[in-house]
Amino acid sequence: MDAKVLSVKREIVSVEGKQKMSGLKETVEKIKNLETEKKNLLAEIEELKKMADAKATALESEVSALRDELKSLKILMNGPEPGVERKQKK
Image (cartoon, rainbow, N blue to C red; front, side):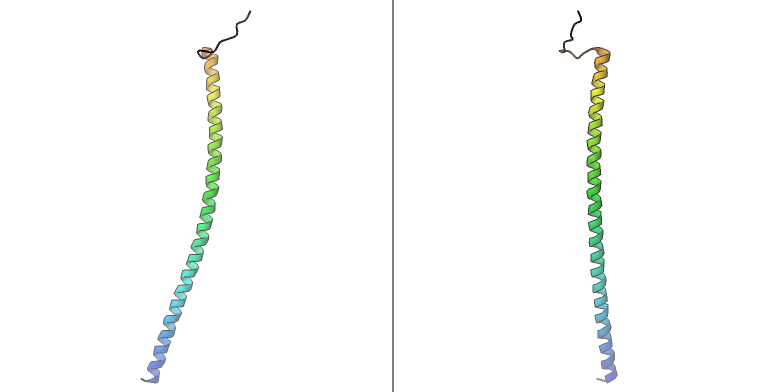
């Protein structure tokens, strides 16, 4: 083979090798970026879960207070519930 042809073939092989390495580097970088994003998203999800649990607990407390208030108002308006005796005044 001609020396020029061999030189061109070597150059092509070198360029292909560099492209493969470049592609590999890009893939590694992409994986790192995706892992970082996954970590951040999982942390955000955990924070949102905590906030949702806190909100649910607060709502449970509010609902309980509203039930107690409703029960009190019913007693006030209608008298005590059946089966509950009143103390009689003398």
